[in-house]
Length: 558
Image 1: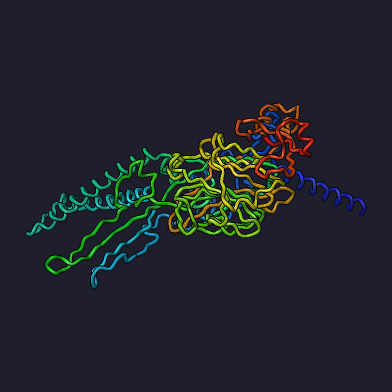
Image 2: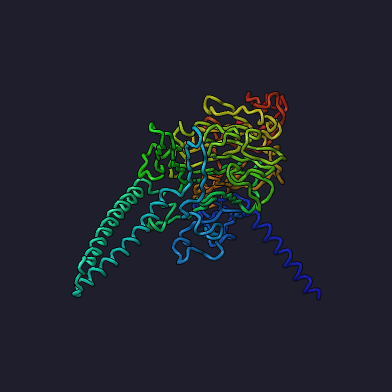
């Protein structure tokens, strides 16, 4: 009995050790080179990669991904693409979060508006039609024409065969007329099919990256990605790393994103007016979705015929992993309290105070529900289009979000500092840091914001959950993350990397990152004391003796 009890105690201790060990592993820095592989510093791996982010293991299902998916979020991987039914057991795919016919429905949403009244019953009717992307429509049209062409060719062959068997036409020549009609129909379908094939080929050549994201089977290629929402209306999705990360002392998140399959916003107009002779005259403008081509310049501007929305966000929150916000303008994080969201908004909502239809903004609301409105906005960058950061162009874009202890207020080197009134309540000398957002250009941030993170998010021992949200509304598109690396701040990279590591230099490089405007590396324990100016680091910058005299021990202020 005693031996059995001792064995039970040993087993419990061993399980507790394993729990602590794997929790510590999961809470260390991590990397998804793509979403078929997950890398940890402390994962069991070959000695050469020990202690680096080259310690990797394959992702075979949701559990091994260390991600918790909510709402419309799912994986699109090579394994799923190459499987016979598009599914892998245990790995959430598109069919698990959306009905298979949604994306291919020809007319998903339809709204008819009466824009103006003339005299009596003279009116102008405008029909607004939100329809699938040009890529999906081209493939649907191509497949439809192919099926019709094959059927027409079969009918023509049968009619011609009946003539070859000696069946003469009747006195009216009806059999010959049938053959001639079928021949004309087949020729017309062949012409349309060839035109569609040429259009399909041109789209593939000009937008190959986006086409591959939408229809990997069509391109005979595939990759592995996390899809936060499919290109379908009214969706919200979220993906969180399964364990909380230490964010209070600083972190760096780098990810590769791609937006694809923007829906089309089409318009048909019918206008009724009185004619000169007292009758009715009707004029009609055809559906603008029937346009065959868009130039590259038009591709990056929201016009009738090309739409898409709503956007996505990188979010830090303390509520746990089983959470997702609202769809549409809420971008999947609206409604989440205790959260900080870096949103990449791709749809103009005037009632929310949006600057334009493509901007980056920083939102928090403390203990209250967060959201994309002006009342929660701490800062924003309006110049995404003017700086050619066109997130809806179907290409891949790199984003980096960096939170560092201390302040480095240098508006000449880093100009985009916000001054929104809502920000000030989260700027405290206690725990003050700098949050920066970089898009494509890793030298100049689009947002530089002072922020005491622990006043915006309820942290547990300095930890919070990190991940992504996205949403679609009456406009829609795919929101994809193709890779993601998250690194916690290391106060001493050299001490954190054991001397006997075969790849110690790589370990030190991975754990070190520049935080100051002149590219200097940061080191030291993050500790802050109130200074005379909450917008400046407590350290005087005049030397250790002067710092000691004013009582500052801020070792990490740049």
